[in-house]
Length: 366
Image (cartoon, rainbow, N blue to C red; front, side, top):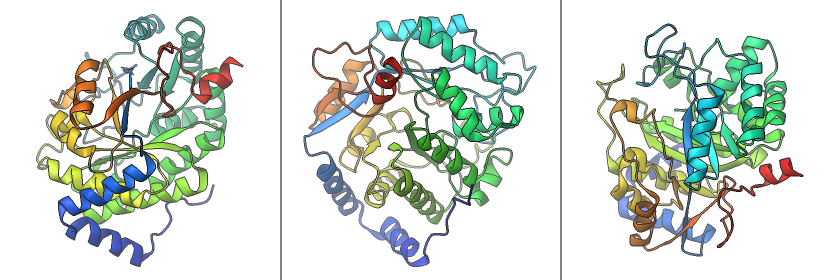
């Protein structure tokens, strides 16, 4: 596949960087809010009820920003059994979950048949939308079995993988990636894997974890590269930015990004990413108040109820809250809260929220 991390025209990069660095914060927020309202004029803010299941924390990638992973043979390392994962799904469905988000460490001991068996077990005994496996996890599976990315995704999709999260993007600039996660896939590979998923009809999200010592220009390059791929595939359902949580990591010396950094970042991303419809707040890293403000800085989605979260909380940040509190925060910000499916269609009043009718699940049922 051709190189995907295209060069960004210097003039475009400079104009975007000038906007990012010099536009007054409230004017920037107003502009981003106008863009949001043009795309979502109904005054609705969506959210999804799901559970984040981290099926293993064993990882050999040694990312400097991660406090969650454990090396092989570490006494705290684990791999959840199919039964444990099924129990977590059943618990989530009892609370109204419409999907699971399933991610783990880069565990070289788990082979393709383990993932296929897991997905088939979920679909047979605990049917739910599976939003799972980051691009770097897909890359590991493909390399272990000497398969192409396309074939790996095709096998997993047929077994029950419905859509893919944007995790592992961090900053899509290799100079930054080489410093914070030298063993992880590069920019081109991350983009290639998402393009391959889009080619199979799988929707994915795009993310950005900032605040790891990158420049403002690096953040802009990341945003513009996401826009470039979206222009080719239209496969990204949403853009999600969050700030790096340094506590307990090898990068703990880096000052934590501020709420103003976050608001400026999401606002500029909303303005530049004119071909991505949905922007999700990160209340998990920013807290509820900044998340509310972000709804006026370009965001139209409050993210996930989650039910369970392990990666960010491993770095000492935990803002998980009940559904009633999410709805109250959305209403207090002046919007109507509405549950959604993974593809961002809203769940109609009176519908069974545990039956996902996103296009991936509907296609699988027929």
